[in-house]
Length: 475
Image (cartoon, rainbow, N blue to C red; front, side):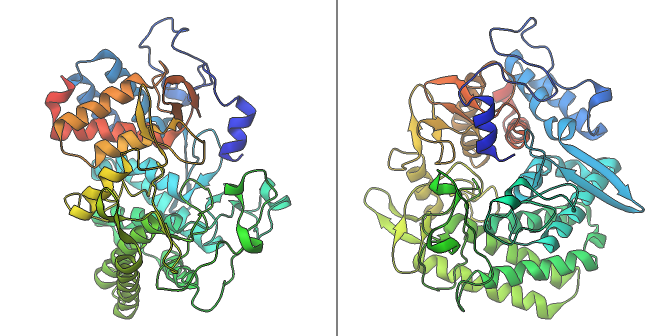
C-alpha cells in the first residue's frame, strides 16, 4: 500500500492509531504513561544484544522520564518490528519493511538500519543481518534499477502493476525512478565495509548491481534522448505522475542526472534534483574507493570518478545562485535551461541533510547559507506555528515532518540547537512515544503514519548522538 493510500484508509488527522507492536494508544488513553510500547520479546522480529546494551546505557543517562521512554521505544523500532531475516544456505538475506506498508524501499531500509551500523563489530548476529540487507538490495537493483520499492516475494505482482503505465516487473512494489534509491544501496554497502572490513559483500552479484547503478546514472543524464524509463499513473495528485507522456518535465542535458521523483516519492517539478545529484557524487566517489581498494578494478574506479566529477562540475554551474536574502545557496531543482526552483523537502536526501549523508561539510559556507534559507519562511515548505519545521507536498501545507527537526539536530554541534530539537520532538509526539511522518504545526495530535520505522530509529540516532557528544543535555 502506498503511503498516501494508507493515510486515506486510516484517516489522515486522527489520534489513537495502531502503534508499532500492536498497541492502540493516544495521550489521553494511557493507563501507565510511560509503559514500554515495544513488542513482547517473543514477538520481536529481530533482537540484538548490542542494541539492548546501548538502550540500557543511554537510558541511564537520560534524566527526563518522557524522553527516556521515547528513546527506548524508538531506537529499536526497526529491529523490533520491520526486519525479516533468513539464511539462504550460507548467504544471509534481510528484507526490511518500512512499517505500515509491507514493502521494502531501498532508501528506507538503508536509513532504518544505519543507526545500528556502528555496533556491527560488537554483535555478529547484527552484522550478519546488515550484510543480508546488502545482499537483498543488490538483488533488488538487478531486478529493476528504476524501481524504488520491492515485494519480499520476487514473483508477486504489485497492485500498481495493474494501473501504472511503466515496465512493471513481478517483485517490484512501485517503479518511481529516484536517484537516491541507488545511492542508498551504495551507502549501505560502503558503510558496512568501512565499519567491518568485510569485503566479501562485493561478490559477483553485488558487482553486477554496482555496474548497473552507474549505467542507470548515465542513462538518466539523457544525453541521447529520454532513455528507457517513463512513468504515468491515473491519479488526482500531480505529484504521483509525470508530464510529457511519462517522460517528465523538459530538460537540457548538462551533465546532471534526472530524478523523476523525489525521496518523498513525489514527482520533481524540474528534473535535476540537486540534493540527489550531490548524493550521487558521494556514492560515485564511494564506488571509486571500493573498486580501487577492495575489488581492484581500476578501470571501473576511473569510470566512477569521471562521472562523479562531471556531475559535481554541473552542480557548481547550474545548481547554485545568489538568493535575494541569503547570498549564494543551492537550488532544490533545476532543468539545465537556467530555470531553478528554491525550496527544501523534509525527506532525505534534502538540502538540510547533506552533511549527514557525507555530501557536504557542515561548515561549508555554501551549506550554512543554504541551511539558513531552508529553515526560514523563504522556503515554501517551512511551516511555523506553535511548532516549526520543514514539510513537503507529499502531505501538504502546515504539516511539519519530525524528520526535518531530527536532521537539524544531526547536522548541528550547537548545544542550544540540539536542546531545542529534543524539546520540539518531545513536545510533538502526541503522547504516543513514537515519531510520525508529519504533524500539524499547531496541533501535534493531528498526525500522519503511526508506524514509520525510519523516523523512529532516526530519532534514536539523534539521542545517541547527543549522548556521545553532549551528554549534559540529557541530564
